[in-house]
Structure formats: C-alpha cells, structure tokens
Image 1 (cartoon, rainbow, N blue to C red):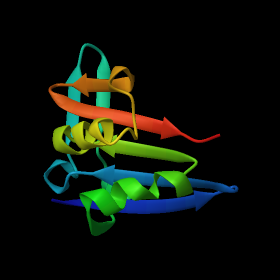
Image 2: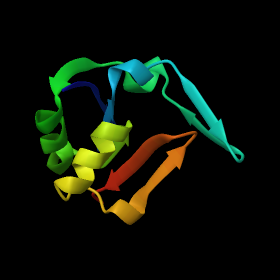
Image 3: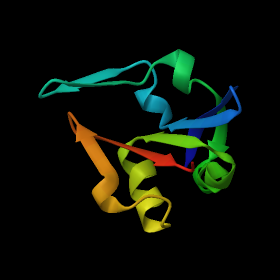
Image 4: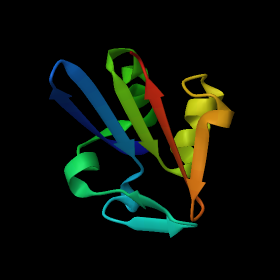
Length: 98
C-alpha cells in the first residue's frame, strides 16, 4: 500500500507527515475534535507504507493519519496502541523523538 509522505524541516526539527491518499484534503470532526488532513501539511510523495514508517528515526515529529497506516505502525512498534486517537472513525497518531 502506498501512502503520501511530506517531510518538512523547520528550526532544526524534522516533521514527517504521512497519510493515506484517500484522506487528503478531508476534515473529520467528532466531540469537539478536528482532524484536518490538509494539503499543505500532508500532500507529499507517494511511498510504500513500510518505507514511510522507516523514516521515524529521522523525524523529530511523525504524524500518521489513516486506519491501515496507524494499525501497521502499532504492529511494527512505531507507536503504542494506547497513543492513538480516532476522530470520526479515522485513526491518528504522533511520534515524538525529542
């Protein structure tokens, strides 16, 4: 499965933003929470899911959006299952390497 990957560098930090392509440009709301999968932050290059998850060691912050993507991240130990959120049925997780 391919996902979209955008890498941003700002003030010495590396942000790796990864989303499932079909979620790009969509907003999800539930119980006062907003998950905005905007193009500025998430529109990047297509990459195989495993290759995208391997970028975690280069990231200061990695953001993951999508049910399959987050489930694979949990399965591979990139993120703990208790550190994930769902907004309107869409999984979201962040990894911090500070």
